[in-house]
Image (cartoon, rainbow, N blue to C red; front, side):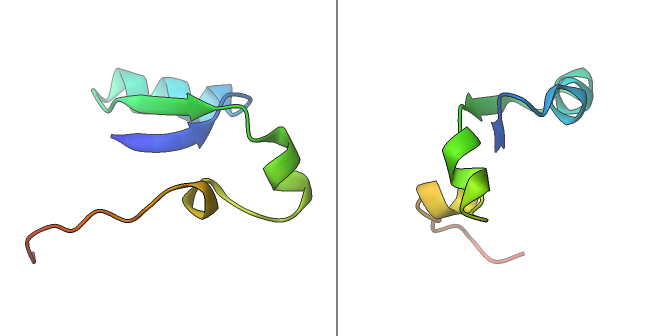
Length: 49
């Protein structure tokens, strides 16, 4: 699962074709402030690799 901007259709389609779920967010205003999708999300705790 990845978080991406709605307007990034090319990348979102590539993820989808690869079987990766995309959670789309509007984010147009966040990009203007030079922020990213991670700025609107909370990191998950997971096992080490």
